Image 1 (cartoon, rainbow, N blue to C red):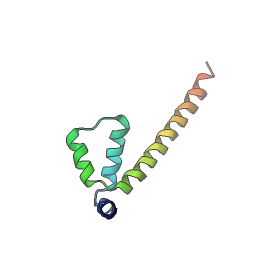
Image 2 (image 1 turned 60 degrees about the horizontal axis):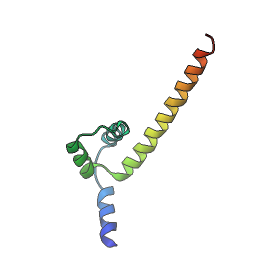
Image 3 (image 1 turned 120 degrees about the vertical axis):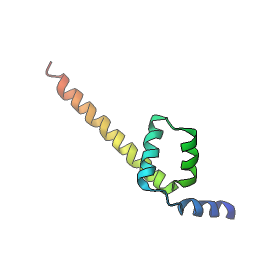
Length: 79
């Protein structure tokens, strides 16, 4: 059990940049990732950053869908 705690502490202490994490999460939304980049991400990214970036990315995606639907409804009714 202490090994898992130590692994988590080491993972959270990683110094990966938040911008790099956002980029990795954005690519994962499309399902496109090179194997070497994936392996590098596993060793560099902070798991807390990944969770925050995933929530931000999902929120932006939902807002973009809402905006798109509003735009389509607004422009399609006049025809």
